[in-house]
Image 1 (cartoon, rainbow, N blue to C red):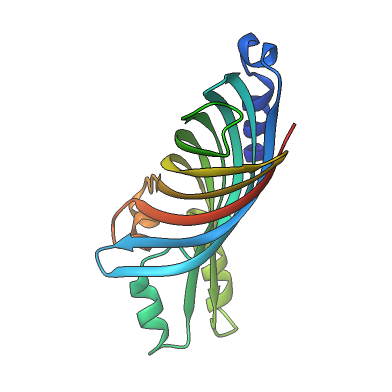
Image 2: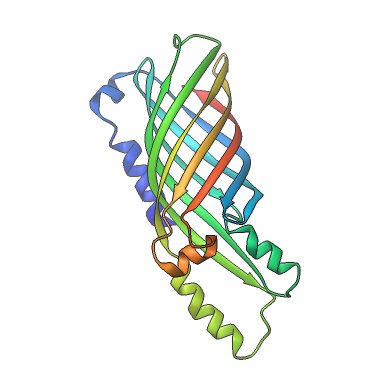
Length: 206
């Protein structure tokens, strides 16, 4: 988690001189719902996070974002949990940097946008319902193999609505988390993690 925070902090601090020459930027907090897709269907779960942006030009921003997405594992595990006492959940805490392009004039009340990001996601696996005894240390060792940091790529778009310094953001994001080894990919039926997110955010321009 500390490495992810450092990655985003460095990405923001390393904005090019053109970004520092431009006045202003914004901070935003957001929440939403994610739909993780796999061979076996989809599962809906909550997400939340924060974002900071610095203006490169009147229509281009450098952005840094951190957030958390819950329950991105294959819905197959949710189905199995209905018939077995053991449950498995995979959450991802991520940090990303990228660029956002905004249409229209900077003082326009409504500005559509598109963005692209890249970074890293820390996968955290939680298993509940495991009986005590010898099973617990075995599960703990197995979790050390799958609690790993993986690359994440994202694209998305939406609309910003401005009211003075306050902004309202409604948008969509698609994120792909590389599963890497076979053990981690098994948590999403042998695939990378593909997440669709609908989010709403409130920000402040400075």
